[in-house]
Image 1 (tube, rainbow, N blue to C red):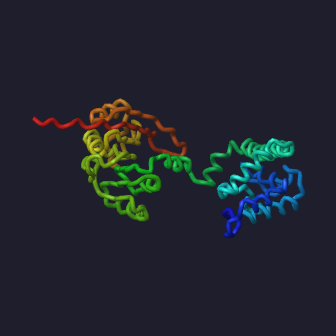
Image 2: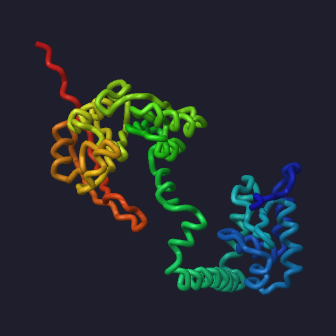
Image 3: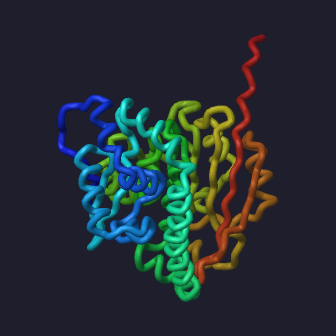
Length: 328
């Protein structure tokens, strides 16, 4: 897509020169039509019931004087009223538009413009009426699996400091990094850290460190959020690990644990070193509370039909402030 283009830099005109530009009613109609939506020459001609040559000629005048901007998209060119007009031009247009808007021709233009926009909506509705059954597969093909979840990370506060504790090869840290102030990517495996370091090398606000959940290489109250993504099942003593997570969280900081629900895949102990065959809500809630967390929320996650592993859950909790030390 090509960006909007307008007039190349020219000397600023006096307000009386702009009055000449708006003296023609056709140009006022075009500006009013383009104030709230983009339109093509064909759409403007249909809505205003004018020849396309007339529309193009007046758009050229308005574009030369920076009243409108245009952009090319495929074979079409789309026009809109310049959103940030100079003060004198905006004041003049506000005055002219207030006088023009109640006229019969302006009201008729508005009705026909609504029909143009409605026609666009009908095309969209027709598409989704026929594509709903295939939409998930189509969206995945176009944008990748779960692009929607990647986009929601923008909801994070940009000042947040996150610990990706048990970061593995750094996939989650790479997804979080564009949206937050700092990511501490920590793992106990040198091989995993090497892969994470390579993946995260382009981020200057991501630190990669070796450490375990039981002994994190972080100062007290260093994090706003701690994430334990498919790592707690490797820990022999979850309460000890959760106490350490509590230590590195600021008061009211949050922990997010994503892991497996209880399952019977005993082979995971031998093949991948799992210490726990999943976690149920009751035990995990009790452990978190013992470690100093409140407001525990355990949620079973939807099962991916293409996955062959155990079902997962997410669990969040809030770190209570640490009790003040009493000096005798």
